[in-house]
Image (cartoon, rainbow, N blue to C red; front, side, top):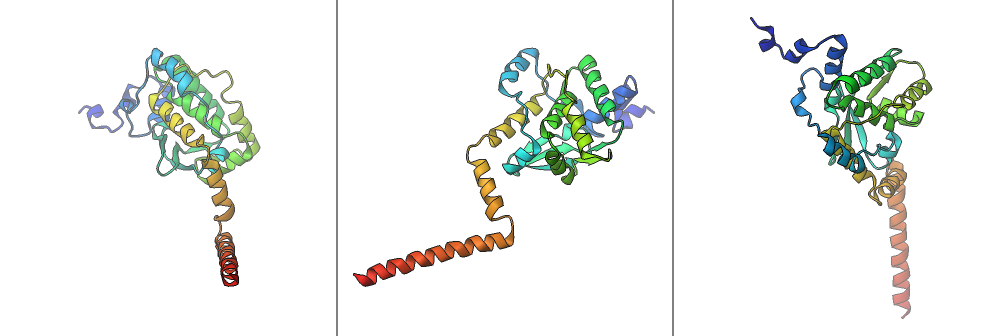
Length: 233
């Protein structure tokens, strides 16, 4: 019996070595396939670099415009942005002492041996999202990151230096489009004002009640003034 025909992870049998298997697991998840990824030729990469290859805002900045984060137990293939729900789906990452070495090895392996740049783009996206402990707290609360380093500062420092000397010369259309759609939403001029107003006045029940009471009081005062003027004349 040919095990490859009956295994849901048949592509693992084609792995060249342990690092290659780890790369497949990290980029595809347990049941994803490479055909779901659409990579661009070099000409398309050059065009995308000026159009889509901007870094994402931080997690706290995206939260201010209403974007939330949702974790999935799979590889980088689960990364996607739902514009209607304003949700950014990310793979759950459990960080321990050896995580930085693993990430760097996978980046180097992809850039040296693979056609696509999906894992490198994942690391760049995470590096963009995490700049301060406030950003990390948002992702930790959303369960996107599980920190076993014992210190938030240590993890932030790890991400802040992760992309040094990393060049994203390859492109993944799916992730480039995702970045473009997030930036389009983020750059809407009234979006942050609306979210800030909502958080300031309608984030808690007692705040909502206070705002409604103030509006009703203002309306009643105006009506009283109008009736007084009409009665006078």
